[in-house]
Length: 295
Ligand code: NDP
Image (cartoon, rainbow, N blue to C red; front, side, top):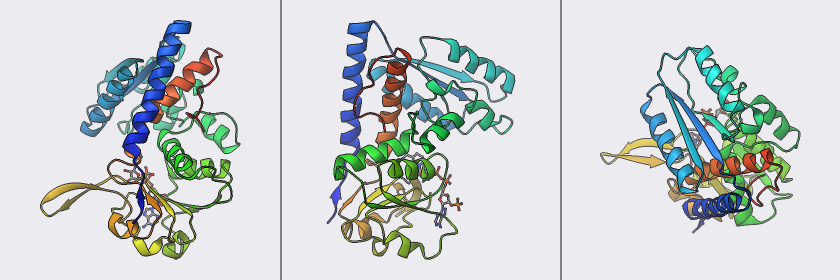
């Protein structure tokens, strides 16, 4: 049976490392990192995410600034708030919770954030910096996957990696990060021919699709490392359950190691948001960046 990659335990370790660095920044430099989270509207899932991000921020000793705006907020008002946060020296990271209401242009809003404070790594400058192998802010979920892979496998150079999914949030940056670590990378998507055969080439298989239990055990090369990014709610046996994009039971019989859902990639996303806020703070003050928390 595959080894279980415990993302919850690793995320706790990352958060502990961030908390220790925050304490050191405060003691030695009088600096307290600050993360501003902007939520427009009252989408219940977004409210839960924003709540847990704020709580996690405070738990590691950072300041959390929550800005909750009504659903009918105008683009001009939202851009004005982002402008104020960009200029505020107490704010080191800015996150605008997506999705935004339909009348707001997400690209315009995200690209209004100062790239140095763009802790989600979605600003076009950060996308370009990552794509050209330069220092950037890296999107949290793929950064978390990379940390888990490095921790489990050591150096990744030369390994064959298949990323299923090509979204701007997960698939594409994941592929860039694996390429940055010298993997041989294939990106698969909904038009890929014979996806099972493509997946069987992978030493590292990352599934970021949004289709419950799509990747089966016989798609996996024996001994491969499987990272399941998917979070899908399904009804089974009269209960709502959370499952990934990988069929865990069949995959765990073939893979060398696998992340569970829940308790795999999910907890790493918030841990990496905190890590990115710390990195942004260190850069803003020309201090050395904490080790092991960036790509
Ligand atoms: P998107 O819907 O933006 O992208 C899904 C990708 O999967 C697309 O590139 C799509 O291809 C591809 N795809 C869809 N169906 C198939 C198929 N049958 N065969 C092959 N490829 C397919 O999703 P996200 O990237 O935002 O999220 C992916 C999953 O990860 C979701 O379950 C989401 O909930 C989860 N997630 C988890 C996070 C975490 O913290 N753990 C954070 C973010 C996301 P095409 O481009 O051709 O349409």
